[in-house]
Amino acid sequence: MRNYYFTSESVTEGHPDKLCDYISDLILDEYLKQDSESRVAVETFASKDQITIAGQITSKGNVDIEKIAREAIKNIGYTDSETDIDYRTCKIDINITKQSADIACGVDTGGAGDQGIMFGYACNETENYMPYAIHMAHKLSKELTRLRKEKILPYLRPDGKTEVTVEYENNIPKRIENVLVSTQHSEDVTIEKLRQDITNELIKKIVPANMMDENTKIFINPTGRFVIGGPLGDTGLTGRKIIVDTYGGYARHGGGAFSGKDASKVDRSAAYMLRFIAKNIVANHYADKCEIQVSYAIGVKEPLSIYVNTFETGKVSDEEIIKIIKNNFDLTPEGIIKYLDLKKPIYSKTTNYGHFGKDELPWEKIIKI
Image: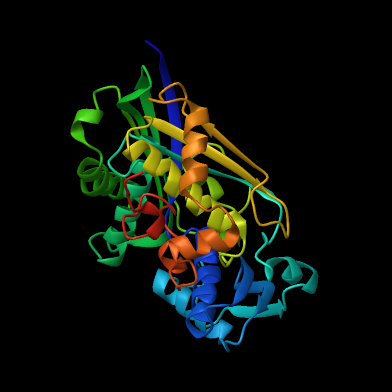
């Protein structure tokens, strides 16, 4: 019997990094609505009273980028420059150029838009084939946002983070050791009331009672006040929450960010395809856990390598699973885009609470292999 602890974190949509991811993905979606062949690589930087949007776009679309950014900030709920940022008054700086012709020549012929390594992962710890710790952290963050937006806890502000530590016994989640919630709030609420409300309205309603015991430790705003938040409290940047976006650190990550990139960038599209394949390897009972890696070279269609690890849970060998992958799936960029239908404006749905584990996304579909 092997016991160990594993921790994953999530953030709310008001976290400054996620604000930037959301703006970048909304811009991508709008270009794809107007031109499905758009090439987009946009990054956003948020700081005090300012949003900076930069990147490369080649498209027939004509998008009001400033309007999209202000609407995104408004939708998240940022309206106060004294505590975070105000969508009405913040400065928005835009610096967009076209995609490099050197990159385009490789992508136009169906090759990968860059070199790199990508990973996909799935396990049978949860119904959505995600690791338990990140699954619970996302549920807490999503519910924390609902409590704010529906004014059940009206003093909450948009910025927030959650963290869950799971105790494993023989590689199976046994209990929750720690739950941490840090949430921005208005100045008029006491820390005592906030901690009581978060415990009763969030933690006790989301975390299964049978996974907590008398030794489970709960931390809520450990430093006390959290009034200053958003870009005023911490700068934000697109692509800085890649572990939150994927598997909470439980599986490896190739290093490439997702948000703001169209599907010709294999950083995004190949990671989605590998999640799809790994999930279906597990769902089809070839293994209890499955991690897949591929590598690409810029301008080259086929991946340079495929690696599979089932962590000794495979019902067949890892080599046999590689054969299954090669016989069933086209891992060229064009093949991935076509199979998952990735030219549609679906990307703002992915931004928050993880890019994986959401049934409505095409790479989460279960098929028979």
